[in-house]
Image 1: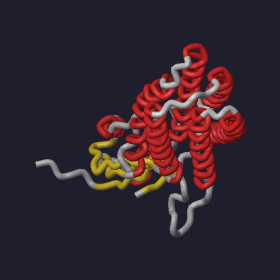
Image 2: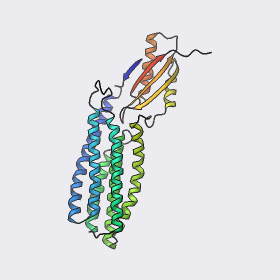
Image 3: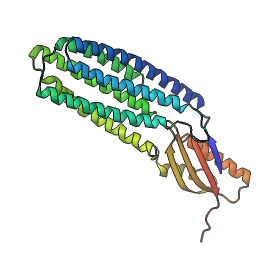
Length: 300
């Protein structure tokens, strides 16, 4: 049995991690600054929508901090107790982010229904200007995660959070402008409820993906049958069985399998085939593989 760790794309991984870290730091800084602006504006102009949006943005800042902490934990070396280190904290952070966003949506829904039943006057123009700044802040922050969002679940989580915030801010802008010219205060919570449906749909997908990874389901984009066929195409591989694939983190996957090799090979040649299999698996997003050699079953 042989175990292997991937060093093939080490420099690429470092670049990815550096870009991710910088994106999170910028996102945290921009959004926390805007939360302060919204709280001051909401209190000064007596706008519940701005205060509610500030609470939503604050939950996103907390989520970004949680994700950044998970990346830091993932870098901690393995130990006798934690043989894979703390890489799986990135998966738990993604799951936590999805739950936090769902809770935030629930709070916003409650506030929106309450305001729909009890409309209160607000300064629509001022509300629209401040929320408009929120669109810029959230979209700019989200763009820092755009390239990573298809490769890493926490980057996807952050991207969805920030774009959701931009949508919420857009709803506040539209509501503020309409309120300014019509005085229909009930429009703001109605628009908010419509936006929440969009947020809920995207967050549900994130929740499912992160939950699957948390319980060691086969990672997204990997199919066991395809992986098995990739291994069988390697010369001198007669049979592959007991294939298991699971996520170590949101960017790294592991595999264990039993492989039967041609009996005509000597031991060193068999080791060469095992290394060829592992090299091919790296190109299919499996960075850590453990393969056990066994005798091929006797054919009747």
